[in-house]
Image (cartoon, rainbow, N blue to C red; front, side, top):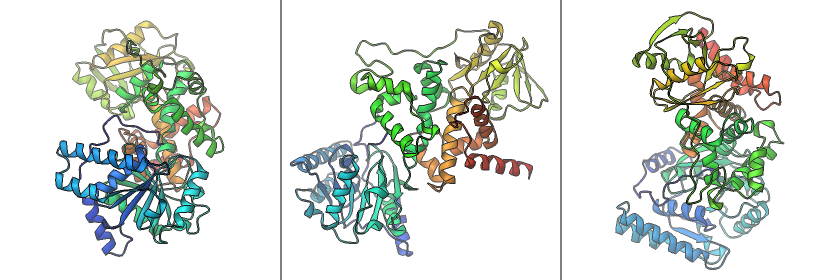
Length: 536
């Protein structure tokens, strides 16, 4: 099961011929391995939500589709369910009646595994148990031809291990679709240790021809998405565990300031706390308990208590009919300062200067080695950099968090120590409220919320690229399309600055010397390359 979700309906997909199919045909004509022909059968083993979704994608693309399930009657039930989905597409005007009739005619419920013998591609979507999958593919090898591509939709098991006992492991590949398969465009094409390059290319071109956006990756725990996404959940949980902010405020910060579609607490409630924690623990164990992937004790306790999220009626939030959703902490209105001084370059927060001026605030600029905003009362307003307010000798220090787009952000998060005067904090609050922003004030926390989350996402992304898991482009594409991130982690870090991102993690590593925040060599390398480019 994938640790990602969408709240839209899975029937919302058209049956138009994808332009990718034309590109795939051109690639085949040029000698590269082409896609599985539309006249060749595609078999799907496993008729749960994911299996049906994959079958629908292949069916609408024009293939004959064989559906098989070891449980008697399940394949026939799946055929009936798919037929009903096609009917709904016709009702919505996304499929014409003639195409619907043709698709139903190509759909077949297989009662025996032997009925998959003519399939050119078999995709497995059964229970996530290694021995069960291994046995299935051993049985399939006795049925299908030697040129049949065998694929697993696993999200948590090793593609290499599943294929380990096969006579022809080179024709085995991972095709990790995201749920719901008919709607979400991303497919991770995973090459196991023994996967032939031509087979991976054939699988890639096939799903591309189905209108999907495939990305290539090596067989590594979590592949791309479930590996790189861990900090989105982990850092939010860490902020909560340190008592710096409550779940509603953390969610609001990442949604309204960071630009993410959902906050991590509401998202894990939707996924299921048990599912999300199991994926985190699986990745952690697979990486020999690397501290970068350490699971959360707070989430473990939530799972142990049976509060698994929406499916049990209670997770981080209550979903009872009469329950009131907790509101994020929002500061009371404060008077905006009439003038400020911007010292040095604010880096990724530089767009704020124009916003302040547009709001009628007089901005004076002065040269300085470090970039910060000087408030009328003498207080300093600094962009989150991995340090804490209490480390300054001066009392009047306030940090503000990173935003994806300061102009579009509807909330700004501030952090300060207890000793900061109410007057300084009020000036900082009023300054951002003058821009029409809501303001949340959290505890004194190094790296705050958005800044540390983005830095850690970029670190794991850079590490994955550096280790040959996937290209930088495919990593960013996977994170945007697989989990709806507002920007790819490397793209975002590039805008913030790789040197700045590395420095922030270095500061966090100094304060939390467990190895969790130690910058990866991949991120450090990008920082040095950025310096060289700037010098040039």
